[in-house]
Image (cartoon, rainbow, N blue to C red; front, side, top):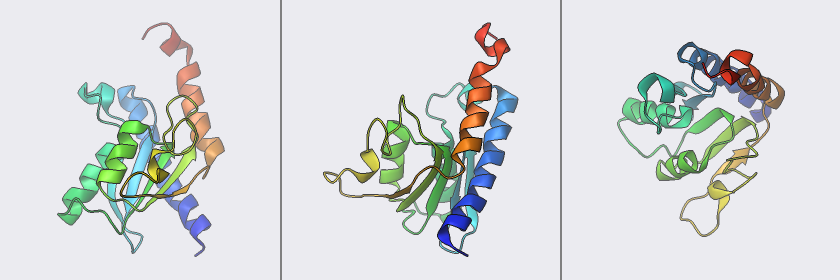
Amino acid sequence: MRAQDQHTEWMLLALTEARAALASDDVPVGAVVVDSAGRVIGRGRNERELSQDPTLHAEIVAIRQAAAHTGDWHLTDCTLIVTLEPCVMCAGAILAARVPTVVFGAWDAKAGAAGSVYDVLRDRRLNHRVEVFAGVNDTECGEILRAFFEDPARRSGR
């Protein structure tokens, strides 16, 4: 299977996680971590509202689960797939875990750290750089976020 097709398939799993975040009124971002054989070893969705923890972004949840699964914080043979471009905090976690590849869907023009606002993942001054595949299923990934933020109930202060 071509890498692009595999990335699209994995992104569908991340989108499932994003939709699940809606149950707790969290921003619908989802992530999965796959190992070198393509097996999902970590899943995550935003859980900030659910847990009242500002660090529980989808990427962090998925990385923690993958590290627990492998018994090692070095995720050097893994790929992280996430529906929204990682922020600076998540980019730092990706670098700390030594994740070599990130695939993301929608760009984040306000807080992205994988090429839009910042490019932390490929900063040559750091000891680890990440291969980034951007814009995978970007329309669907962006639409779930737009629908969430344009919801009249959210604007009224729910």
